[in-house]
Image 1: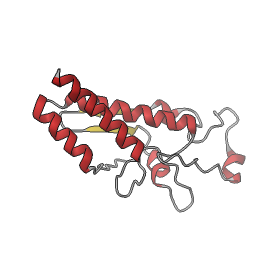
Image 2: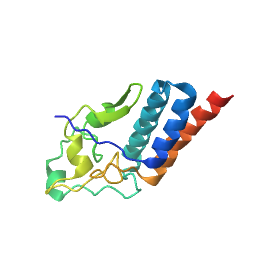
Image 3: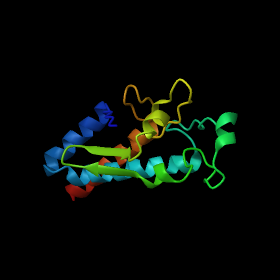
Length: 150
């Protein structure tokens, strides 16, 4: 299963264009952006909150009843599979952050039977980031831009 969501952000695009004009190679930037988002998602597993800071919905009683006794007893971290398999990849023009497990999509978007427990997006349907995530990524870009200007 593959899912692609593109982040649409005029402010990030503008800053990236400025950086590209200075360096002509965005691979290191894309790597840094991917790492920043990967770390932010890992932090969400600790705080058990979505990108806007809203706590993840607790398990339904039916889920809790069937939860394996040898599991981690944490939301989205039954055996550590999703958290262990988050990663990022990059090339000269993009960064991709995601999970090896296809079922992560169900958590990001929610289903008719399961509440959304967002990890990446403030709104996955539109591909928008939370304001804090967008600021963090912009800061990463400006740090690299400032270093390139020296």
